[in-house]
Amino acid sequence: MNETIKLGIVLLIITALAGGILAGVNSMTAPVIAEREKLESFGALLEIFPDANDFVPIEDSLLDQIKSANGNVTEVLEATEDGNVVGYAFKVASGGFHGDIVFQLGLYSSGTVAGLKVMQHGETPGFGADITDKPEYAESFPGKNFTQGL
Image 1 (cartoon, rainbow, N blue to C red):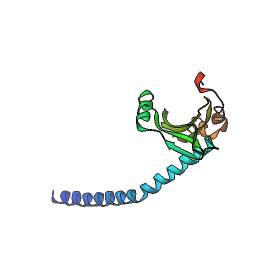
Image 2: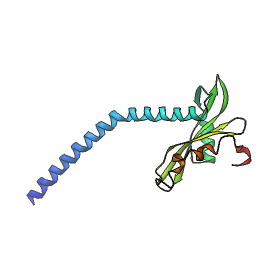
Image 3: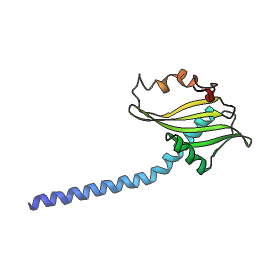
Image 4: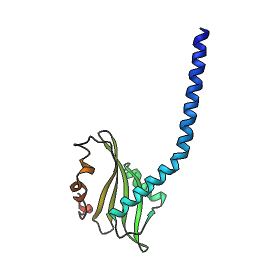
């Protein structure tokens, strides 16, 4: 019995040390990872809206209204060119077979789709992953009128 308690204490110390080390590494890398994700997102937005030079978050009250109407929307940005709004970029997380598919969807103010860029997915290679592997998927959206349905 005494040996079991010693082993339990040793195991507790080892797991506490490992947890502390992991927490320390996470606190050091979390800001770097967040910055990298922000740059990737900004790059995707520039692909969708090549003429835009700034992306401004919409008001929280309006975002809440959009989220209540469509729970898949996680972020909405105004795409502006020299201060004029040219469209809106929606970050959407939609359910896939192996988790959420996160993508950026750009919509021009004129009523047409600016573009679509898949940011993250866990779909099966050679099947569901075709959304990123085959460019004709994303290329099929730009120019379509979203007010009349896609």
